[in-house]
Amino acid sequence: MGRVKKYISEDEFMVTYGDGVGDMDLKKLLEFHRAQGTIATLTGVRPRSRFGLMKIDEAKSLASGFAQKPQLEKYISGGFMVFQKKSFDYFDDGWLENAFVKLTAEKQLSIYKHDGFWKSMDTYNEMEELNALWNEKRPWAV
Image (cartoon, rainbow, N blue to C red; front, side, top):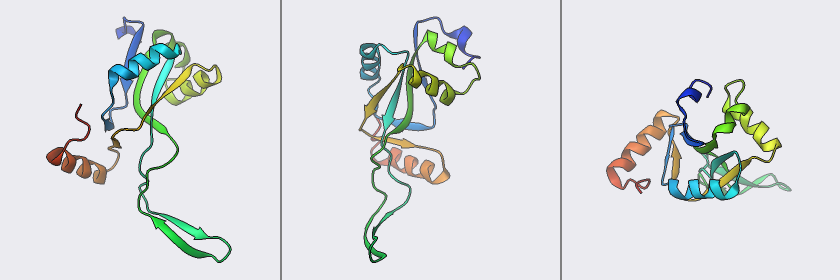
């Protein structure tokens, strides 16, 4: 982050990892960030599991069901972020994740929950899935 500091002239700026797509309403994300009054805001998303999950009857060690690639209950960073310029004080070693820990400790990291479409493109299979979606319906188009 230190390399871009000299290019940031506004007090607020947005960042994305660039390896995910979603139907984020960036206007609402920014409004949420401003209302929270924190130094940083991450977009939280609930991805689908890459794997089918097994339900197990623990007493009998028997399968009791399967959930094929369910949507996870916990949130992860969706890679769409808003920062105040003073956030650069937290990026001393260049790693965003380390800055998030520091911001969290100071109660300066808000989470904007996004329950709409979101998908990462970290693997070849995910790229193929997103290309197919592009040709079909483009669920991230706003």
